Image (tube, rainbow, N blue to C red; front, side, top):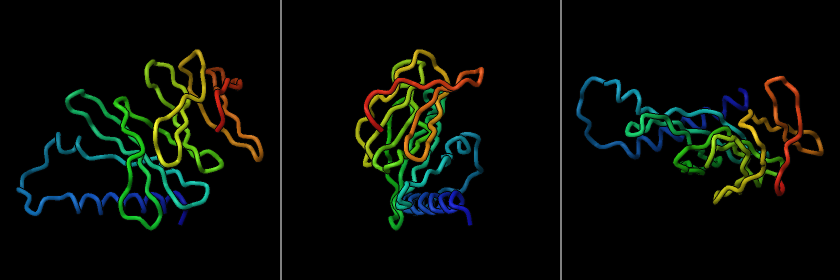
Length: 169
């Protein structure tokens, strides 16, 4: 079984356990509505930690009041039953990636503007700090080499140029 499949199974089991614990004892039977379908949380993008002890993943849910979806990042440690939320920003977060040392998470984010930048967060959570500063809202992809890990900005013309980074990670 592939590592990604194992991650999905682990996340699925954790979500089932959490859902069973939170379910009321008696449920009124009624047909499922469109709103019920919208309220189903979607789990995706599993990312194993470099040491193989944790999995980051995203949970996407609907915000009916604001008429939009919001995605947050969660973590589950192998052997634990309860997943832990890592982010809870109003705009949401997506696409978590582990730094090679396993102590830092890399998150593309749009906290105050439409410019997508990369943010860093400690493995155990806390406030994210800005890692890149680029003028455009271009797509960012995190690449890794054997000894040096670089971040590249991919332009629409498929030309790779380095991005100026602040701090480490």
